[in-house]
Length: 391
Image (cartoon, rainbow, N blue to C red):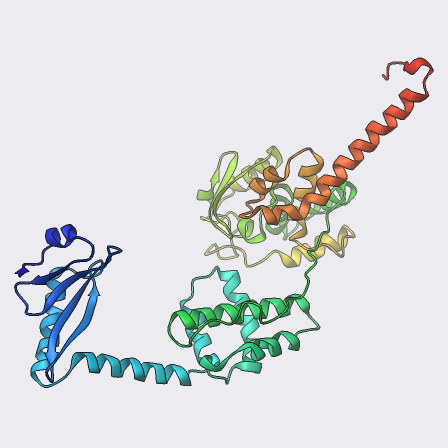
């Protein structure tokens, strides 16, 4: 029994059923027990009954499925077996995949896998300098545990870079497996990752004072824009590109509403000093960017040159721009903020990222405990535990 396949009959089809179309012989809607729906064409070739998938009902309408089915039947009329042709195409694709080298696949990977611009740049650097010189000529289908170990070992002098290169290779192989270019991803434990000690350099109060003084001085020089961008980094704890590439439509009174960050959209509250910096710039705004380039056609490329100058003048030779973000976290904890509050302020996606500052919170608590203990020592040493009021 057949019926005309329409949107209504497709939507009403029950799991585990098959509805044949009344207009094209052999065309049917197949509904699995799980409820997924797809179009198939049933036919006979050389005395055998066969069935070929046409496409998902989520992607095709009944009319489109009919056009595909009629095209397949036209081929059959010329003596072609659609299923055998499809199988041959798959085998040919598999043969091509077996010959596809890692270098060739890397071009597809970089162009098609969605990543943030900074991650793309890191991938390109790792591929160019480390991964492809060692493994680029190998077929994607043949890369295995021993190749991953060889890559990781080749970077033993730079443990963190070795981990990053292995992570990239693993993700590429997982993506290749998803595309049918190899049987499976790399084994999860094919290398032992190097221990990574996170950098924990925070500015002290005197260092903050020196840096702020230098940046204020630079505001009266040609480096003014970069100096003010660095001031915002000191005050907000934002990532460098979140400030350098800031647009005016992301500045909303006493907060920043960042449209696209490493962890997605987020709101950054602004202190009075940060608002003052932005007010100064708004009075002279000349394009959509808060810190535009020389031609006002985009954001500033970087603030590193001004940073190196400011760092040297302030005597902070071991401080990176990103350490300003760590310093905001440490200062916040010293001011009494909790780790979850710090994570929210800095836009951390995972609580594990914020947990790196736990020792700072422990130190603040330890200092508080020491002050309380010292007070008790004074109480215990006083006659009858009586102390004069401290003015």
